[in-house]
Structures are given as C-alpha cells and as structure tokens.
Image 1 (spheres, rainbow, N blue to C red):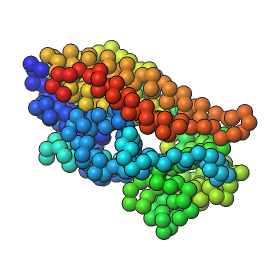
Image 2 (cartoon, rainbow, N blue to C red):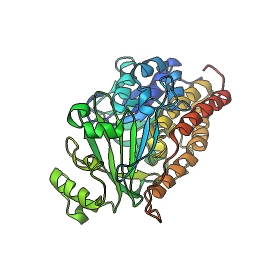
Image 3 (cartoon, helix red, strand yellow):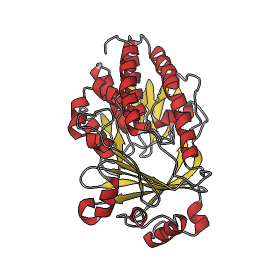
Image 4 (tube, helix red, strand yellow):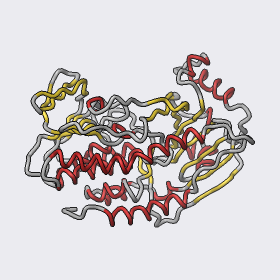
Length: 400
C-alpha cells in the first residue's frame, strides 16, 4: 500500500492472530484487541484439524508451519464410526506420514500464534462495546472506558461480532440442534472404556433419530466432544433440567438416549466436570454485504457455520492470511478490502450453506431408523491435498 493505515484487529482468536502475523511479515503494523484477560484465561474448547488446503496454507504464510507440526497429532486424523449400540460400522487409521489434516488443541494453537507475535501486539482485557465512525476515522470503544482510533478495523470477533453490525443486519439463527460439551480426563486410567471406543482420533456414534455423540482425542490424555440432539433452543427449561446439576442432566440424557447400548452409555454419563450447554447457530449463507470503507470481518464474524466439515477455524486462518496479503499487495486500503471480500464470499458461501444443510440432514430422522452415514475420512483427507495443490496454483504470486 501507498498508505500507512492504523490497523485494529478485534478478536484474538486464530484468525485475528494469524492476520497480525502475516501483516507483520509484510512490514505492516497491526494491533489486536481481545476481551479475554490473557491468552489462557478461559477454556478454549477442544481440538481442531487443520486442513492442507486452508489452515496449513495460512500457517505456512505466517512462517508457523514447523511450529504447528511440532504440536500436531497426525494420529488424531483417525475416525471410528459406531451405531448407538456400540457396533463398529467403519474405521479409518491414517499412516504416520499423513499430514492432510492433523489435530491440534485449540488452546495450543492460540498460544502458539500469540507467543510468536512481537510483545505488545495483543492488548488483552479490551472488550469492544461500540464501533463508531467520524470523518473516515473509526473509533473503538471498550468496556473499561478507553477508546482507540483506527483507519482499518478487522472484525475477528466471532459469531456474535459487534464489528459485523456495521456491515450487515444479518444475525445467527439457531439450527435446531443443541449439544452438551463433555470431557473425560486421564482416560487411559479413569475411563479406559471410553478410551477404547474413541481410539486415537474421532468417534461418531448416532442412532438415526436425531441424536449423536461426537468426541475426539485431545492431547494429555483428554477426550472432549459433545452430546448432540434435536431440540428447541430452550429445551432445558422445557424439560425441567438444571444444567448446574450433573445428576439432573444425566437423568435427562438417559431418558433422551434411551435404547442406547451399555457399551456407549458411558459417553453420556461418565464425563468429568459439568455439562456445558450450547446451541448450533449459523449466519445466513451465502452471506454478502456492500463495502463499508475501512471495515471488514473474517472467520465466524463473516461466515459462522455449522461445524460439519470442520471448516470454521481453517477458513478463519485463511481469511486472515488472504486479507493481510491484499493489504500488502493492493495500492489502497479500499482496493485491498474489496479484493479480500470478493474472494472470501466466493470461497466460503457455498461451504457454509452446505455445512448448515449437512447438519440439519444429519440430525433428521432416518426412515428406517438406521444410523446416518458420515463422509469417508480418507476421501476427505485426499480431497484436502488435491484442493491445496489447486489453491496454490491459483494464488496471486506477488510477494508471497
């Protein structure tokens, strides 16, 4: 750019941190503002598989692919499929050198991205409450009373993004499926039956009637995931379930998942810690908006979608890299943001629509009550590699 804009990134998740990395690599200053008190001040969630055609490309652009590979678990690409009685339906075990979509804990990824940034890049404890604009200057207002002025504001602030509200009135909708976060600690010793069911990777267990348990091996002897079921968004109140009382939740699950076999029942009842209730929500897809000078969004702020396919974090990372490249390569901020948004809309729109539809279909009743099939894992991995080659061949070559 001919300009030297003040760039504020709102949100210190993977997409925001990756954008800062690539911008800094191009010699462009940017500061990240995040509501959390520190990089590890809250539970970051479970694990992610980073795809060769998106997340790994972004990490390579940031010079962080070796750091990722030092933490990643290639064995975590394994997938086991069982029915609700525990019968093994399908199993995939990756080779040791398969790097199409290795797993990494969310907390490990965020910490890695943060620790490789220059000190002071991330300002923790900055919760955005409002974004205003006057005479082309954007002012970020934070909960503790301070303000920051910026020429470019990048919203990496998630599904309920405040930055996105300056671009579109679109808001996330509930997809009709709720879930409960579950975790099992020190599984080889405390939960050997769960460890045996899950193996080294992911376990899908479904009954063909709108109920599923989807869990994944994490690092350090932990398995995490969720118990998912079709329900009204206020299901707990309707069912009289006290979410703070594990016995109350377990009683509901045993009723809701009646008929599930004894082999898989520990997945419902033997978790460590409280159940955490969440809901699957997504933005309308495909979603676009008219350009607003100096403001854009990435990741879930731009295209929050159902988790089927595991695209969310991967697209956030790639969004961050591609936006940073555009800001480096285009002559003006507006040319850069227009280029980024045009490509991002094309890249993410159909993926988001397909992921949302896949979730609805997966949790719909099967006519014969059979377990609904899931994508073939090896086919997915090979498709990531093929698309990675295509994507690299199509990228703008300048200064990469």
